Amino acid sequence: MKPEDRVLAPGIVEVYVDSPRKLEALWKTDFTQLIMVMSAVGAALAAIACYRRVRRRR
Amino acid sequence: MEEFEIYDVVVLRIKAATAYFKVDPTELPLPSNIELVFAGPHGGKPKAILVDVKAKLRLLVNVNGGLIPVPTAYSCGYVTHERVANANVRYVGDYIAAVAPGRARMLQVYYSTGAFTPLRVVVVRDPLKLYSKLLFLKSGEAIPLPPGYVVDLGNRTRYLLKGYATTSKDEVALEWVKQFYLEALSDHGEVDGEGWYDEGSTAVISVAPEVIDFGNWTRALFKAWIGDISSTTATVKVAVDSPKKIKALWGYQYYLAVSSEYASVSGGGWYDKGSYARVELSETESGFLVRRVFERWGV
View: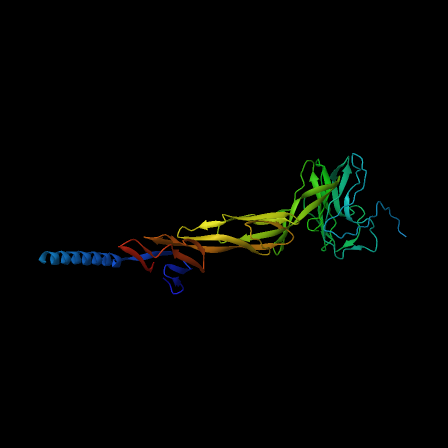
């Protein structure tokens, strides 16, 4: 990016063309959803396991 | 009063480099006394004094339509011994006597018994007053046109000799056409139509191609002709009424390449130099559980 370029919004940019240019969108990987789902599943499994153990003792 | 015989008295007032007068007709064989004499015929006082004459004289006789030189010439009357001063006469070849201020001598300038090739006189009239002259041409000899055929007037203007028109049997008129130079300049492409054009004509100037790709994501586009004429089309008709100078105006464009591993991106392509291009992703996040999130633009 050059100083003359203007970022209008995430994913939207105005590029000043004073020479041949190449612009590439760079992405990152977000595991947040996966972690949340995995955590929820793990918590559910733990809860089920606890529930079964309590029922066996009775 | 002294008696003498006058054959012919001719007064010539010449305002030209060359002139001639004709005495017709003349029979064959030529009279023995026909001759070119510079001074004469009177031998008494006052004597003929040349003040300021510089001329080349040739006397031709019309014989059956062809002109031939008289067979002999004298500086002054050979027998009558005219008195003449300051008139130098000498032979310069081709039956021509040159007369100029100088020591006057009585002499026979030339004498010939040879066969003459008949000549014809052609009056060349030049509207520009540059090549007006008399031509003595041999039978079948073409009229020699002025060398170069061009008179440069400066300021990209000239006269071009197109040819001549025969206005009478013994007279031709040179035909000139005024021309102007049309100069067409361009930093790119091939310009066609630059050159000399007749006044009043229509010239067609063009430049091609209109788009020139330099191969490094840079290209030039024809914008307009500027200068003495203005036009936004690459091919333009020009009325030639004066010298003109025009120049092709080009605009430059650069290629903007955009890419994205995820989501589609718009805005790539050719853009004018110094302009702004709007580049936009179709979405900034994609995927489920493992998501791809737009972070920044890289170059």
